[in-house]
Length: 224
Image 1 (cartoon, rainbow, N blue to C red):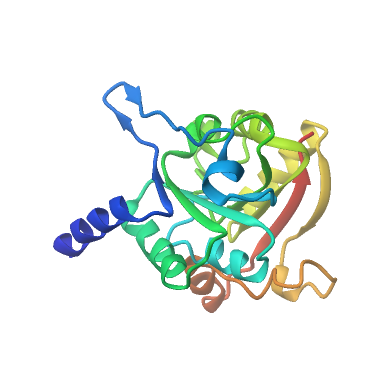
Image 2: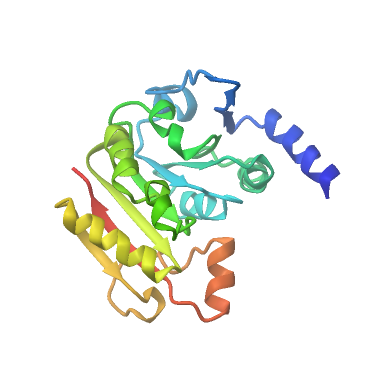
C-alpha cells in the first residue's frame, strides 16, 4: 500500500493537469496561474467551477463531462487521492479539468480576484466540535476567502450527509444576510426540478452514505 502511494505521488508530480501549491517550511510556493487560469491553463474564456476537498476527483470529472463548456478545478491536499481523477481526465483527453494539490485555506493564493464562477463543497469534514467552528468550510472565515475569488453573483453549492452541518450552514446564511437560492434536507426524496445532473453524479463518499440510508442535504447560495 505504501509503495503504491509513493508511486501515485510520483505520477501526480508529472501530470500536466495537476498544479502543486504547497508550503515548504514557512514559505508557500508561488502560484503563477493565479488570475491566469483561463488564459494559461485552459486557454479559453469559459466559466471556472472549483470543487473543494475533491478527494478522488470523481465529482470534478463527472461535472466536467456533463458540462464541457465550463472549466473544472478540484482542490485537495492528498496527492494519492487526486491521482485517480487526474489520471481519468488525462486518459479521456479532457481539456476542461484541472487539479490543485493544496490546503483549502490557501484558496486566495490559488485564484485571482473574481476569477471563479462557482464553488462546490462536497461532503466536507463537518468539524462538529464548537472549538473547530472556524475550520468548517461554510463558516464566516471561509466565506470571506471565497468572497475574494468569486465573481459577483457567483454560486456556492453544498452537498453533505451531515444534518447538523447542513443546519449550521443555513444559519450562517441567515445570520449574514446571504442569498439562499435552494436547499433540501433530503435530495433524493425531493421531486422538484434542479440541475439535471445533480442526482446523477456522486462522490465516492456519497455512494457509501446513500447505500447506508443517509439523507443527502443540498444547499445553493450566493455571498455577494
